[in-house]
Length: 306
Image 1 (tube, rainbow, N blue to C red):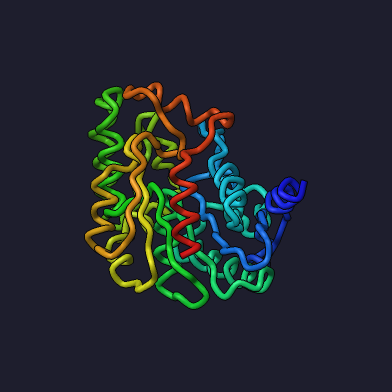
Image 2 (image 1 turned 90 degrees about the vertical axis):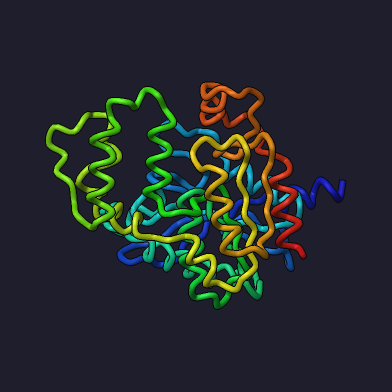
């Protein structure tokens, strides 16, 4: 009976807010109890919410499931909605008017609030996908940060990653010339005229997101990893079809002392995939009933408890 009560306490989700630029930033704390390590989960790109879902086809709830799994291992987590979105909608009027530095500042604000709330001396930053860039950027001011867990994140400049993603899908053949041209301009700091651009590319290169893309494409994750002296864990599932092994390798080359975890069947949304085909992989993106990879939870828990 005692273990059931303790598990229920560990899994209790508590809403928290901190002041944002124009309104509150909102998130959820899953408190594993006094003295537990605290992990701040930083979300990936686009309109991704605190559970890891977004309206562009992801409903797998990977962050919520990760928080629940870590709570069962005695690790507290916090996951937030990005400024201008969902529960943090009032924080800024335009959710596209952001930079990686803005998100990094929010992460440091949350870390400070979590230290005060939980009594922890420091907070671990776990960045998933684009969130890994945010974690690395936040770590350049390391006060109050225990270390970094970089999950399914780019280790090279994002232009190379986006090019690989587009080229990996044969259906994109006709889209590649205008896409590559747009990337080249944005990497040079120049916005792109989308008049006549193929419709499938408009979501990626819409005018309102181009200033953020220019900032994003300028980030060098390997260089940031090399500059920080904090402990780092690098995680990439071998079934990830969005971020390649080359990215994990680039981060590891920058920080050879980092701990590596490469679950054999885990994909980008932290789920295990049985098949090798793209359709089987993508099917997991919309299935919250599938558990996340068990070795991911174990590996993170072991890392932050050491």
